[in-house]
Image 1 (cartoon, helix red, strand yellow):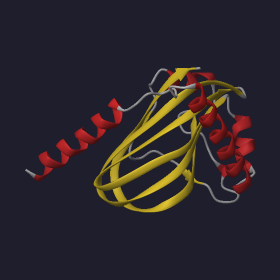
Image 2 (cartoon, helix red, strand yellow):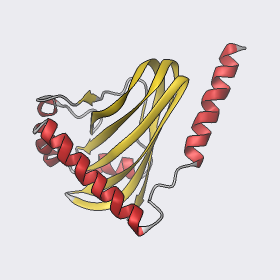
Image 3 (cartoon, one colour):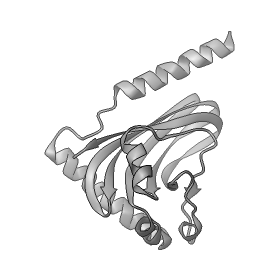
Image 4 (cartoon, one colour):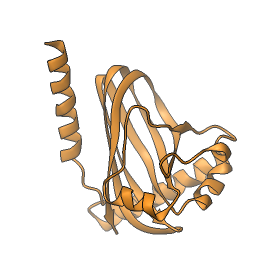
Length: 181
């Protein structure tokens, strides 16, 4: 009974997150704001670790989610809007949704950078074929770590905490959607 209730709650959270997805901001002002937030987040992440610039240069393209908001109490979820870049040029917008279940409590915000090693990895992302499971490898940004990041299945993930407190031992996954600008 508890497992059924937990699964029903998780599916409700996931459905709510997916229904609320819009990918591209709806107005020109919102698009300009998201682009400015992405530029600011990249500047902050690069200042935290100069290896971020080298990592982005190694990749074919990247998606930057300047603010991802996450919360949970047993069942959790996260959502963020991002900007997609190919070979240094802005080419689209993307959404990140996440659902988790397990021991977790709290709320936090963070920036997430996905760097794509090749055009093939970027194309998988744009086609919605990139999902991260519970065992996804992400590196929390601290000085010097970006220099040693490896691509796993053509993608490197860097997370930069912004604020909040979250304690968790949970399983779940992230899903992405993308739209050309």
